[in-house]
Image 1 (cartoon, one colour):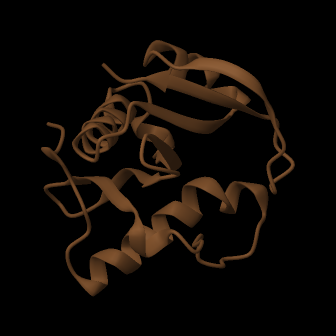
Image 2 (cartoon, one colour):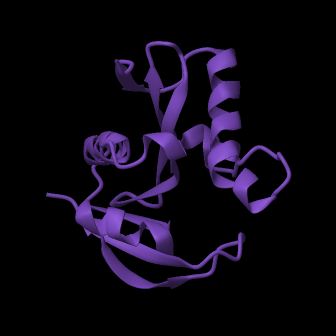
Image 3 (cartoon, one colour):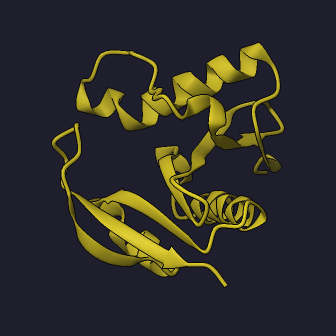
Length: 147
């Protein structure tokens, strides 16, 4: 039987550490990038969500911040490899979009790894232009208008 999944923000210092470790493990470790926390100057002003199992294992994550009054941005999306194609990414995107709407955003932008383009297209995002990532992995800037 599969664990129950809860989508929520990290609550404790220990959960924040697990969340930071998970982001690195999913997004940077496969690229052989050293374990430096993935943080930018918007980290404290951002909304962080994770999918966590009833056995307390993080299996997906995503972050949202506002670029301005009307545009939100999704960053640091990741799903455990053995949990992909089960709807967890969609649940995280949905939670991030609802947060963006609550903050008054009319659009969301993101820079998707090209391997994830079909996922984001299935969520209603449109490809805008290529994006140069600091990881040297091909990315595309995408956008969705919220209704």
